[in-house]
Length: 189
Image 1 (spheres, rainbow, N blue to C red):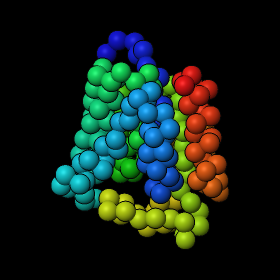
Image 2 (cartoon, rainbow, N blue to C red; image 1 turned 180 degrees about the horizontal axis):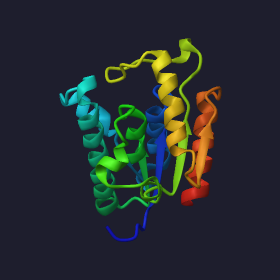
Image 3 (spheres, rainbow, N blue to C red; image 1 turned 45 degrees about the vertical axis):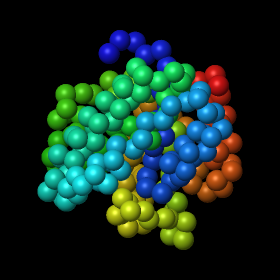
Image 4 (cartoon, one colour; image 1 turned 60 degrees about the vertical axis):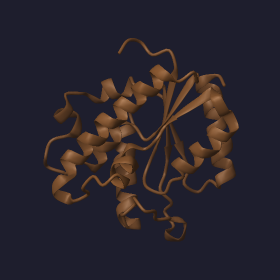
């Protein structure tokens, strides 16, 4: 793929951080100015892809390649000036089984190559309070596991040059307003 002409911003973070809900509001707010790349893991899991500990490497590689293809397809086919990604290619690093190398090694990439895919990263933390943690049909992690994943994900993305951390204590309206400000600053919309 040649140089990108559209801004690409990833929304990531631990489970139940508000990524998908925020993206839905941004879609309504910005309309055709943005195109959204859906979360690949949800597509796989709702489509019947096996979700077992012994398949973790296969699952994360599949998610990685689907994310890349969906992002590149959206880049090529959308008239929008900004691509919003519900999670990014690096997220699989946090889900990769410990002691078994890294996802990026297995797909022949580096953090720097993956950082270059995104103009900015909006990181939305998992709520630390159990009463604010919400499960879903594809979210199987306990609250404790979600908080651990949140820490791992932040570590994976911490060196991106334009990382915006969303405080998990912020209310939803505050997160929306901050997300709109970030898009205005990073994408000029």
